[in-house]
Image 1 (cartoon, rainbow, N blue to C red):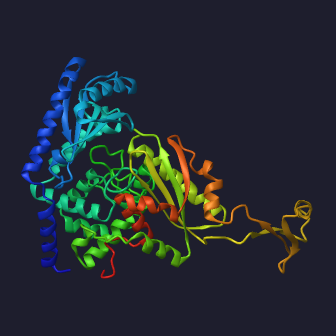
Image 2: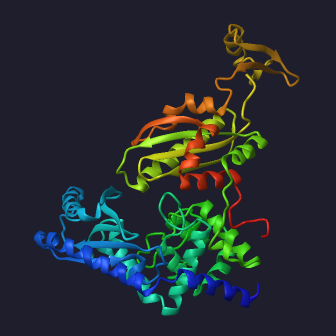
Image 3: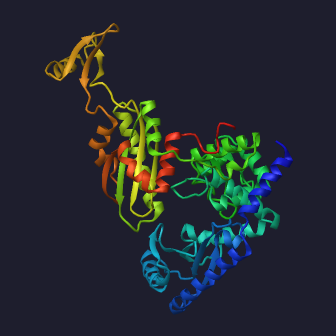
Amino acid sequence: MSSTNFKAICDEVLNDILPTPEETERALNLFKVVSSYLEPILKDLGYPYRISLEGSVSKDTHLRNDTDLDVFILIRYEGMNKEWLEVLVDRIYEALQRFKPKKLYASHPYIRFREGGVEVDVVPAYMAYDISEIKTAVDRTVFHTQFVKSRLSKDMLNEVRLLKKFFKGIEVYGAEIKTEGFSGYLTELLIIHYGSFIDAIKGIANWKLPQVIDILKTYEDFKDYLRAYGWKPLIFPDPVDVKRNAAAALSVKSFSTAVLASKAFLEKPSTKYFYPKVVVDPWDKVEGMVNSRRTAIVGYLVIYEEGVSPDVIWGELKRCLRRGRSVLKQFEFEVVDSSVWCDEVSKAVLIYEVMPNELPPYTLHLGPKSFKAEGVSRFLNKYLRSESVIGPWVDEAGDLIVMKLRRYLTPYDVLLGEAKNILQVKHVRSYEVLRLDMLRDLYDSSESFKLWLYKFIIKRPLWLDRTT
C-alpha cells in the first residue's frame, strides 16, 4: 500500500466528513434551547440535577451532516424507579411539544425528536458520583464521555472520525440490535488503543475469533477473559467498568465483515469503503436475477405496534427471522440468506432466499433395521394401515423405509402454515405472507426498501466490487 495514496484517501474523506464550525454551533445552540425547556421541570422536582450533553458532539467526534444530540437529565434521587421516570418523561414530553417528540421505551422511557436535521434523545438517568453507584446501563454514559475526553488527543479526534466513517461505509457501525456492530464508544476505544485509523485497520485485519483487546491488562491468561466475559467475537473490557465487555453487542457477522473489509482496504485502498456506490436496477432486472438462479424469495410483510423502541422491535423481528430459518430447515428447505427491513414506524419485511423453490410431494422416512425386534412391529403397524405412504420396504442395508407425503411443498406454504409459530412476539399486530412478485409496489415506492432488497439479492457487499 502506498503511504501517499493512503494519505490522499484519508485527506479526501476527512475534508468531506469534518463538521463545519457552523454545524457544531447550531447543535450546541439546540442543546441550550432544549435545556431551557427542561430547567423549570427539573427545578420543581427539588432534587440535585444536571442537564448534560453526552455523545459524539460533546467529545468532538461527530461527522458532518450526521449529528445526534444525547441530552442526559442527571438526577440525584435514590427513589428513582420506572414508575417515577414514567411520570417525569410524561412531563418532559408535554414541555417539548413544539418539537413533535415521541416517547420510546428501552430499559426505561426516553424522548426522541428531530429538529433541523439533528436527532435528539432526551434521556433521564441517575446522577452517579462513582461508577459503583450506577443503577442502569445509561447511567454509565457520563463516565464513558469523561474517559474518552481524557484519553483522546486533538489529533486523534479525526482518526476516530475516519474509523467511524469506515464502519458506516461497510455497514457495521452502531451497537443497536438492528446492526449489532461497533458503537461510537467502542470505535473511540479502538483509536485510543491503536493510536490512529491506519493502525486500527491493520490491527483489525489480523483479528482472530475470539479477539481480546484490554487497555487495562486486567488478566494475564486468555482463558480468564473467557471465564469473565463469556465467549464473544471481541472482548474489550470497558476501562470505565471492567465487569462489562464494551464490545458485547458486536455480532460474529459484523466482526467478520470488519476484518474482511480491513484486509481488502489494506490490499487496495479506496474511498469506496467510506462511500460505497450502488446503482439500483429496475424491478424487472431484479426479478430476472432471482428467476435465473431458481431460488425462492419468500417472507412476511409485518405490521407492528407504533411507538415501540427501535431496539425492542428489531429484537423481536430478528427472533422471528431466526425462527423462520429454523422452521424452513425443519421442512427440508435450505435457507441461502435471510434479512429484515424495518421503517421503525409500523411496517417491516422479513425475507428469505430459499432453495429449492419446490420439493417433490414425497420424502423418504427411514425406519428401524428389519432384523431388530425393537420398533419393527410399531413401524409396520403405523405405516401398513396408512394409504398416504408408499411402502414400507426393506433396502440394501436392511432398513425399513417408507415414502411419506410432505406437509409443505414450497417455502411459501411453510411460512403460511407456520406463521403463528414464527411470528409469536408481543408487538406484531398483523402479517401477510409474501412472494417476490408481491414486493414490487414497495420496491418502487420506498427508496430505503429498494436499496435493502437490491443489496439482499446481489449478495456481494457494495465495497467488495469486481476491481478489488
